[in-house]
Image 1 (spheres, helix red, strand yellow):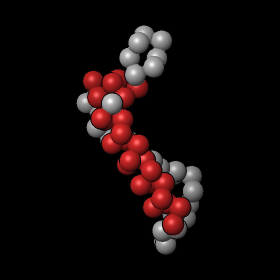
Image 2 (spheres, helix red, strand yellow; image 1 turned 60 degrees about the vertical axis):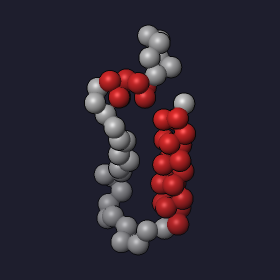
Image 3 (spheres, rainbow, N blue to C red; image 1 turned 90 degrees about the vertical axis):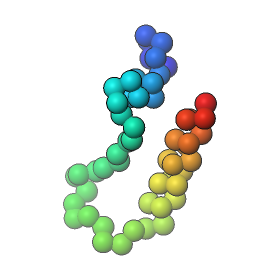
Image 4 (cartoon, helix red, strand yellow; image 1 turned 120 degrees about the horizontal axis):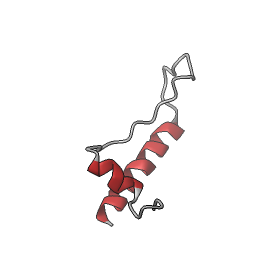
Length: 55
């Protein structure tokens, strides 16, 4: 919750945001194989986002 009483999620939704993109442009070259930790973290983020939407 921010100082003005609006959550970051509500702030993003009010501005038309409906997604969060994770990127690390400094980690070049990009991986050509996806490691298990990448899939695990993506699943965690998806589950967390779903739970947040439900309140």
